[in-house]
Amino acid sequence: MPSGADPVLHKRERIRALVSAGKRTGYGLFAVAIVVFFWGFAAGFEDWMITVVALTMALGSALLAPAIVFGYGIGAAEREERERPITRR
Image (tube, rainbow, N blue to C red):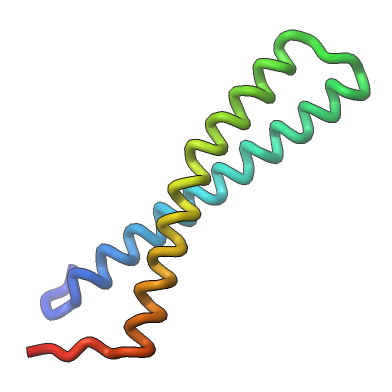
């Protein structure tokens, strides 16, 4: 981090990057679950398909839930800073 840079903004950008990765991965896992589910629906479910759907839904939810919450938190912090700037001493 360059000297003089705001450490809060630096940490916020790191969290934003993690949020983005979490959302991409979570939604990607949901997409895999949907594709395998419809494939199983059309072709007949096999044990491995049920396992893949269940695991990808569980992992996707575990990644996506905190990513969405932290994303809203970052958005709220930025909105508050725009509406009411923080005065530095």
